[in-house]
Length: 203
Image 1: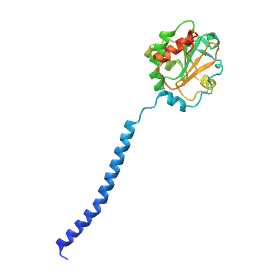
Image 2: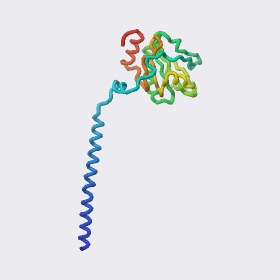
Image 3: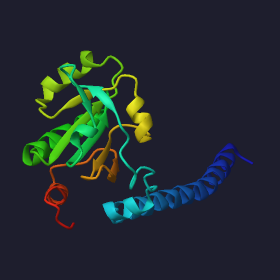
Image 4: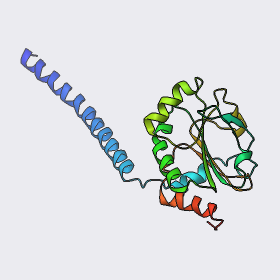
C-alpha cells in the first residue's frame, strides 16, 4: 500500500469516528436548549402557592410571649404596655440584608398607621446592641420604636428560625400572623388589612 493510500485510509477512519461525536454534540445541545425554553416559559409561583407549601407557624394562635427590653434611650418597653392595640413585632439584625430591604416599607407602614391603636416594635438581636443599631437607625431615618435584645432571648421565646421574622398581635394579645423573610409592608393589600384590624373590621 502506497503512503498516499495509507493517508487516505486514516482520513476516512477519522471522518467515520467524527460523525457519531458530532451527532452526540447536536443531541446534547438540543436537549439543553429545550430545557432552557421550558424554564423560561414556566409560569411564576404566586405567593399563595408558596404559602401553601410553607410550614404552619408554631406561634400563630398563641398568646404573645412576654418581654421587657430597652429602647435606644434605655427605657424598658414591655408587651403588656401595648395590650389593646394591634402590635407589629419585627425581629431583625443590622447585618441581615433582607432586613435592610424591608425597613423602608416598615417605616412607610408606620407613618400611615401609627396612633393609639397601633404600635410597631422592631427588636434587634445585634450582639453589640446600640453600637451597630444606632448608626443603622440614622441611616434609614427610622422613627418607630427599636428595642435591643443582644442576648437573643426574645428570638427563643418567639421560636424564630432566622431574621427577619414578623408577628402581628391582635388587641387580645394573640399572634394572628407570622411572616418569615422580608415583605413589602406598605403594599395596599397588607396595610389595608392591618388598618381593618385596627378599626375592628373583618378582613
